[in-house]
Length: 66
Image 1 (cartoon, helix red, strand yellow):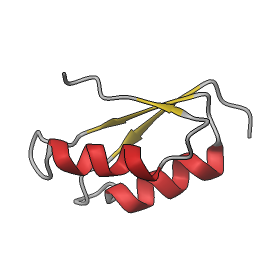
Image 2 (cartoon, rainbow, N blue to C red):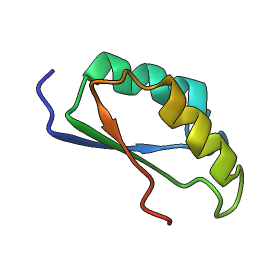
Image 3 (tube, rainbow, N blue to C red):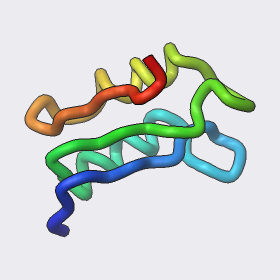
């Protein structure tokens, strides 16, 4: 795949857990990845930080809710 930016839904209910989202990011290999849906209804900012820790270091990952 060839993607510059990927926005990945993360929150478990109807979306992915942070581990699944990180595996997806590492498979797609975008230049930038941003998780969303965390902290609104389910899951927390800490889950989003765990996601970032699992993403390959050559992929820029950041949180938009800061």
